[in-house]
Image 1 (cartoon, rainbow, N blue to C red):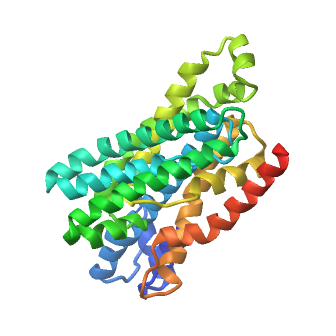
Image 2: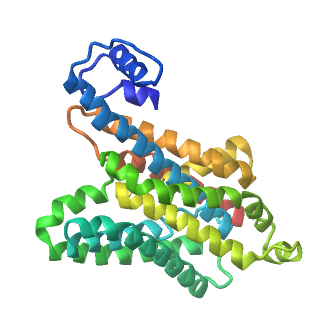
Image 3: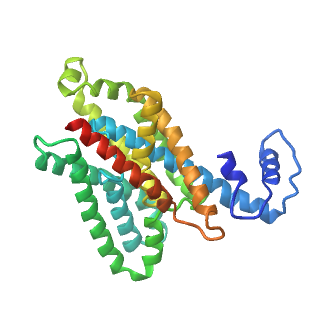
Length: 321
């Protein structure tokens, strides 16, 4: 995060940025020599952008890890299970049909409802179509649901052509919303993360199987429902303030599992931290690689995530066979 604050498309010497950051600390005084315009750029643009990228990355990664624990499926991910698409559809509907302050009030609730609805639809479709099937069945159902919801979203976009550019930019992912978006996401993010972290031990128990977990006294249905709602709330919070940013929820938990083992008591908090670092780095690449132009952050995560997902899918199919 510090590197992302020091480096940017704007031509400000990193050492002067570092001095300005020190000067903002409560008991430290340092002369950075920055003009008020440059200080405003740091405070109003670069700092909230880095913080929002960290929040969104952490939420998507910990939600992905939680979905993988709930469904006992290493391919589960907010983007692939229909959660992000559901939140995207309802958020688009709010943008298209609502105006002004009403949007700010409705978007979080709409995104949450869409995220939960998307996951439940994918889960139900996977159960119906995949009786006796492999673990990839749920993901394939999620892909089908995602495609359908995206098609409906595209239809809504055509109803309001004048909003098309705004919606298109949102779909590709954007963490430049500023302090207002951080304030919007913070309460939902805090609540959902606390619930997921508190259920790490129970997800470990759930990983041995429903019957075995039930015999150990675990209320399997309740744990699944609570974690599913918390992960969907985290996804909805991220999507509502940043748009659709894919693959964070599958890349980061897999890397964490490789490095720290499979216990959800460690996978969940480390995914939160790793997801924050991953998306801050992706945003740094997005805003500097073609400077002064910016790449959508979703493009950067897709470049990393798409080949990674294919590799994970191949490993999963090899294990199943």
